[in-house]
Length: 387
Image (cartoon, rainbow, N blue to C red):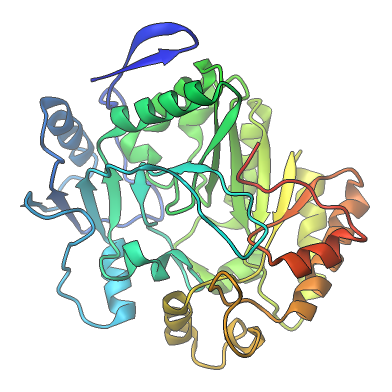
């Protein structure tokens, strides 16, 4: 059991949650459960896993206790079938380096602390960048890390050493809310940040499962952000994901409960009528939800992720045909050609600020040249992932 020094209160215990009623979330489909190395190493972890499995009755459980969580061979061949099988496989494991500082270079990302209570995402977006990352490509299962107390203790130490407010971002390598009805992790995580003098929490999700969050004391220390696209784009490219309307209602509920709420419209997909489709959606979003910040971004993916996109959508798809020719950018990510990105950002910022002229707008993982061109005429604010 981890002992934390929260707000000068020593010896505050953090435990895995086992008092909630676990439920399989909507839009999540689990066909098998695998227990990997370290997942059953203590009575607390074993009790937690039993509790969670109670919310998935009839799902077979397999033990591979000598295998790390990221080396599960699903015995499926072909990139697309492997990814599909991985999203139906729930793995319990331990992630020792769950709290890290990002090391982006070659773009305008400010870098930040981020953490992982989950690995990968159970949703199915055809443009998914996570599917092409090194930790997911060969073993694309959905993971729950059971060393929650140790992860929280690590964030506590980092924040107390920095002695200033610092954000810990959850959503870089997973969807942090998609499995919350099952794990109940938010009931531990949000109160930790609410009590902490320095540690703050920023998370990005496509989930609409916010019921547990609404009654938690958060103190404004948890910032909730949603990944969104216009409904017509979501229906076309985001399968097994809560609808845009469900997400908008969740945002309204959380804003009413006092949470700071942000939106990330990314990846913007340049369909033929994108100026009208996206401008109308942004006007509706900004009118409806009291956003603290809006972030925009296009495709910025690595080779493996784009390979999957082509397999799912065909070689001549609306994403691939707009990628800049030649090599990837300085950070190794492929993007739309710069002129298109500038036009998209200028148009959408104007649409949003026509409703709220003071709205802070940021660009995600953008190259410096494009950022400067936009910022010169439409001042940009800080990114979604930081305070």
